[in-house]
Length: 201
Image 1 (cartoon, rainbow, N blue to C red):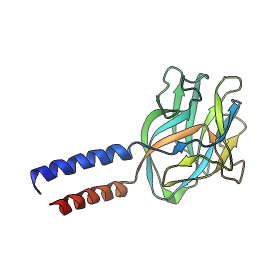
Image 2 (tube, rainbow, N blue to C red; image 1 turned 45 degrees about the vertical axis):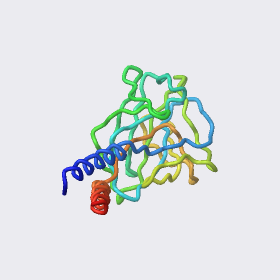
Image 3 (tube, rainbow, N blue to C red; image 1 turned 30 degrees about the horizontal axis):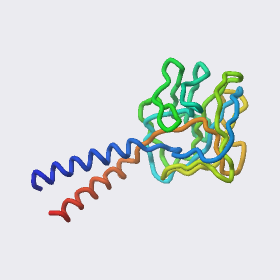
C-alpha cells in the first residue's frame, strides 16, 4: 500500500471511530407532554439487535439550564433487577449538554443482545422543580439502530427497579445514553475503508 493510501486509510478510520463514539440511544424525543417531578423512578425498556458498549449516561434537561434537583442517578438494569451501569449527575457536576440531555462519562459497559431486555431509568424528587418528558404512544421517541424501544418503565419510589407500567410503545425521558457498536462492527468499517482504497488504486 502506498504512503498516500496509508494516510487516507488512517483518516477514514479516525472519522469512523469518531462517528461511532457519537451514537445516542434516543435521537428525537418525539411528541408528548412535560410532567412535573415526583418521588419516582422513571425510564424505558429496550432491546438491542447486536452487542453495544455504553460509554455515557445522560438525563433530559428540559430548559438546558442545569438540573433543578440536587442530583439524579441514571441506571441501566437487567430484567432481573441487577444494575449494570450507573452515573450520578448533580448541579455541581452537570455533565455535558448535548441535544437536550446532560451526559456523564462512565467506565465502558458492554450490553449483550442475548441478555435483554434492558431497563434504563433515573430518579426524580417531588417538588424539586425538575421535569420529565412523557412520550406519546402514537408518536414515540426515535431510537438509533440497533436499539428498539419496548415500552416505558416506572417505579413509584426513587432508586427502585422500574417495572414496566404499560404494554404499549412509549417512554419516560428521563434517561438516555451514548454507545459504540460492538468491535465486529468497527472491523467492518475498517474492511470497507480498505476496499474503497483498493478500488481507487
